[in-house]
Image 1 (tube, rainbow, N blue to C red):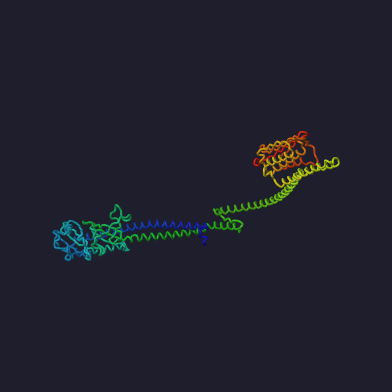
Image 2 (spheres, helix red, strand yellow):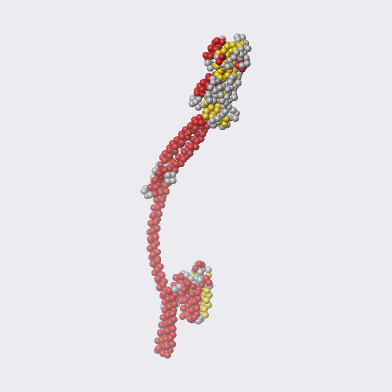
Length: 597
């Protein structure tokens, strides 16, 4: 199992791990990208939702105030008793209700005695001055006291008679008690989670409606410019502010619009939400996307691994079949069906295997044939070697025969002549017998020396040690010492250095020629030259002796026959020219390679 999961030993494992790595990489990258995009989208949606909620809350608040202002204006046409009953019943949150004539004298009121604003003369009151000319609403107290019953401001409207002439002013005080509950009700309707804090600010930034701890204080959040919450062309767009406690909140503000009213447009509805709540949903969505992407990546990797394992089963079976063939457990590679790459590869392997087996069979047949031929050749070589050894023995016998002829035969013939002469002297001239015996002894001594010299030459090869030229020169010096003849010798340097196995044969032929001249030629002068010409070695020996007829056979004499045999043995061309009383000339031409010199 572990071997199948090792990518170094299994192509399938390598493919599976590659797919897992790719799936994991793509899943992580996609989750990070998608999570970031979703997070930004959710944050932007949250910002837009908070802005819409703020605008909706400001609009609802403006409509509520406008409705009360319109009710005050409409109630001016009712009789006084009905007016107070109608307004207090419809809007119990009105602090007090008062009616003043055109001179500013308070002529009627509801709860007026409990209000410091309700006095007998209202001519100098803002609500009277502004209400005598039209609908008006204004702020009364910019600094509500914490814990007291806060109030919003005064509302006033002109009273008219049947002819439309203004005869007085009707006014009412609107407190914050109703607005706190309405704002809380609207906030809960817009934000069921209750994470947003709802406040109403005055134009000076004073918190008029909100938690008791903040009411009456000035909002002191510091704006933080960010790409998500601010814009260059929208100063009141939702943005982040750093709070006094060090936290950060998303702030959205919207002004309260009053319908058909003349008053300062300074009231603002503010919704604030901590930054962690703003990003909570976005981060949760990003984490959810991340986990979903990872799960999808894992599922994709698992499916890909199963698919790769299924797709590569054919390749794995092919590998097993090839391994079985390699271990000689199977005779043929199994070729799967189909026309895909695995089938083509298996077919190619099977064809190569068949071709290799056919070639192997042919090689075995050829090897058998070669072994048979080698055996035949070996027997032939052995036969030739045997014949060569026999030929070598024959050549050695011939060489020994020639040496014996050149040494012992000549000596024995000389001794035989001396014995015959001694026999004749014994009969005819006994006094000359001692001298001939001494001469016979000298002949026998010379024969013994020549036999020893021949044996030494057979045991050693001075020609190869010194070269053909020096060997012939020493032989000529010995010839001159024995015969006293005048000898002209010419040997060039290249010919003198010649010293392979053929040089010994040429040297022996030269010695045989010198012995024949010494014993049979009766010459007074000898010419010998050893030269090289192109690729040939030339030996020339000539004398001015009595000569002979080469065509005449001489039974019992093998000197010329031995010379021809030796020349034929080394592949040289030999010619002997002679005639009676005209001397004898011997010429030998041997073809040699340049490196033999």
